Each structure stands twice: as C-alpha cells, then as structure tokens.
Length: 181
Image 1 (cartoon, one colour):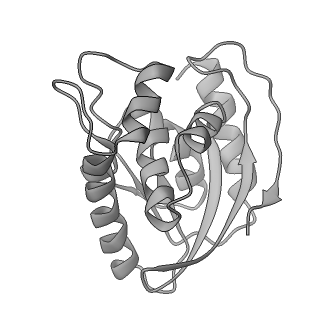
Image 2: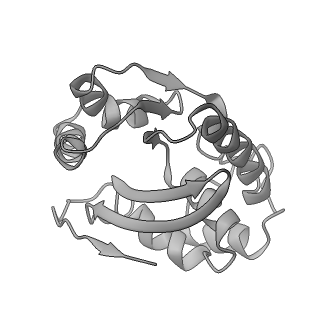
C-alpha cells in the first residue's frame, strides 16, 4: 500500500469504528480491498468479493473528462473494448440486490470505485449525473450511507470524503459530513 492508501484506509476505519458492521463486500480490485481491509480486520470480518462490483472497463480512450461527459450523456455509449454506463449499472444493481437480499436488516460495507458507485446512485436517483460523478471522483475514499427497505432506497447521507484532484495529485486531507436527504 502507498502512504496515501494507508491514510485513506485509516480514515475509513476511524469513521466505522463506532458503527455496527455485519459484513464487508468489495470488488476484487486491490485498491478497493486495501481501502476497507483495515476496517474489516477491526470487525474481524472477511471481505466477500463480487466481480460485478468492479469498475467500468475503460476501453481504448481511457479516462478523461470529455469521455466521462459523453458516457453520462448517453448511458449506452461505450468505446471499443469498454463498457457503457448502462452495462456497469446493470451488473452493479444485480450484485447490490443480491447482497441486500442476503443481508436483510444488516449493516454492510461495500467497497467499489467511482463509476460503479455512481451507476448505483443514478439507478435510485435519475438526477444523479455526470457532474455528480465528477464531484465524487475527486473525493476518494468517499463514504455514503444508503438505507434500504428491501430493495427500495429510503435515505442517503454523505458522511466522509477526502478531497483530491482527479488522477491522484496532492491530497487536500479535508473531511466533511452532510446529509443529502
């Protein structure tokens, strides 16, 4: 882990220490796993991996703001070798619904990446779009609490984020908390 990753993991643990956490889920990517590993260890829980929670396959054009805007303007658009927002959303919602079904009345943590999380947020709030996505990709790790009744989202609250410039430039080490509903 890099020094930045260690700091991020410590921030996640600090936020979760006084919570009741029943399970940890994550995509299989090392960065996501590392971010929640310290918290999972604190709660003596294994991290259950689900490949459907992985980040979008970026294709040949990579990640840049122009391509982000193009993908979010047309959820079915994808470059050669890449995935569309709609494709990522479909598999992430399938995974989330299964996780919710398997964990009724439990408090769970899901570690994932910006596009994957954004497609989930867009599924429940169609007003969540490119500008919201661009906002949170600068805030990683980003902790948002989603409250469900069954598979229906009833509340959400942003709790913690670390403001950073996109592409990992110098971190600002800013934590904020506010409710969005």
